[in-house]
Image 1 (cartoon, rainbow, N blue to C red):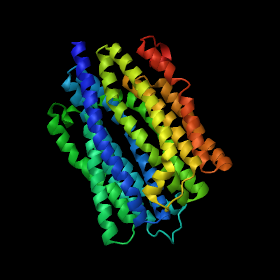
Image 2 (cartoon, rainbow, N blue to C red; image 1 turned 120 degrees about the vertical axis):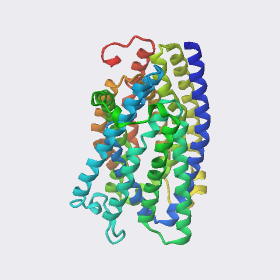
Image 3 (cartoon, rainbow, N blue to C red; image 1 turned 60 degrees about the horizontal axis):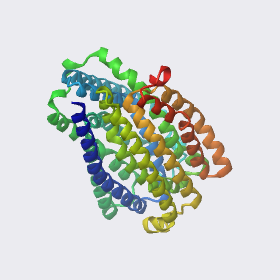
Image 4 (tube, one colour; image 1 turned 30 degrees about the vertical axis):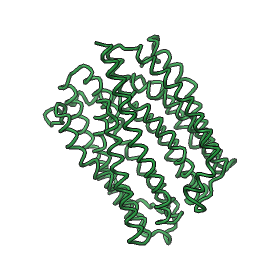
Length: 442
């Protein structure tokens, strides 16, 4: 039985990696096309504002208190045991509580918006960008809709078909590209139009995907009758650990744009993000490879198939070595790529490119250990490490920024990644060898 499960698990992962590579490849191509297209529609100053605003609004996804990933793990366990009733309870409880959270938070935001000055928060000149507060209010509403319904992606993750989630992202990117292209030929540059496009389109895609998902998986279709408060604690206990780790990741990336905007000005957000977006190809592709194995490792753990986990672990480390070689080549050819991609619109320093490449190498290695620990659901050490990373990153980035300029932000990011590599390899080895005890097994 385990052998059959092993073959099915591996084949399913390989198929999803193949499909996801095609979909993500298309999405990457679209996002690269969108950069010069959007820069041609907006100026560098307005584009930097949108990037920063988008980073700030992304914090709303923390409101799921990690429940999306908690649902992913718990639903995977229920499906491995063929307990569809339990799966239905987890799905119903998760969506119900998420809806309550988003409604309460949206009401609080509307009240707080009366007192917030986004011009000061984002360091924006009111004469250059009128109506910024209104733009934030409109975009926030669409982000809230996306926040709730994007959790359908976790349903597909639990079924070990993450390619379905990539399909939703691909459709959203295609629609965004089409709308931006039409705008460039029919209207003058408008930050509001860009913000509306990039926030409303994902919301619409997830909203449509919600009923479709439960037509495909009717056995776990959410129902008010299956909402159980006692199961909320199961989701939240695991979810809070994921939440803290998410916060650390957001602090180390999302706040970078804010720090750059405050220290150097909104225009310097653009070259930083261009360099990051260039290397994000590597992170995206490697994440595609890793994603199916999160839930697959959970499934293997439930079935006590540790030989399969050991084999996958070795193969992922070998794949990472290929990643490093690829990053080195990308650094060498970066100036040529920038020239073809964005021309003379933005200048990206070579030091920024090299440091961004180093960060990606460290980040992808950390992700291997993170996905394994996520699959095991043993996150206690990761939680405390994330707290330490969150505490030290911002002051470290500010200090490095003062001494090394824009490159200092990436130096701080690399330092945070190195911190994670001091403990994660040991814990993964212990878990896979079934020798983990105490805090290393909790």
